[in-house]
Image (cartoon, rainbow, N blue to C red; front, top):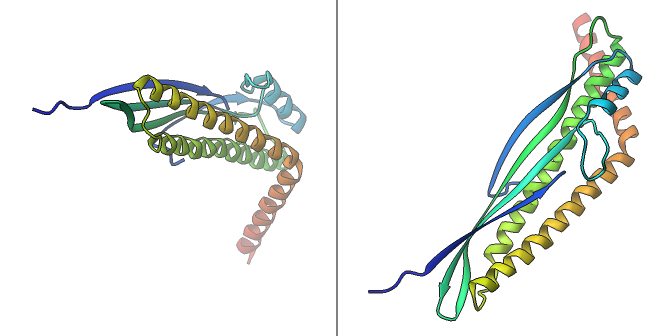
Length: 207
């Protein structure tokens, strides 16, 4: 009778703040802002937006993430191998919801529609970046060479996870840096595009 390989399962909980990975669980939550002018909307976002731990500041949107890695090990005489690796990313996307009271200037509403769509796009991209690194982590763990012991294999898995998640954090920070630099020109371009579409639609209705 052959003995089955000893299967060990290690669960690593690795948290990060702010593809397809093995598994993605995404939820949304919203915070309400008021205001009728651009300055009032900005003040509301600054005072009611989610506070990001990495910056200590409030932001117009945020994405909270947790990486959970389940690793299976098979022990043979003189070696221990990773036989399975499953990465799950749980994300919570936090977005603003505008609830003005009374009549609002069309220009302000156009700005808000443009801004809120851009905030959502930005946060969804954070999720995509995490998904890509989740897939990379899973693949890297599965490709790990056998180690002499399961303790050594566990340590190796920890090294791989730490290195890939560090690169993940760097990629997220770089994305934010580039987005901030291009923010004003991007919003103006998007507003012009929305305005042109609205004017074109109005022209079709007249004709």
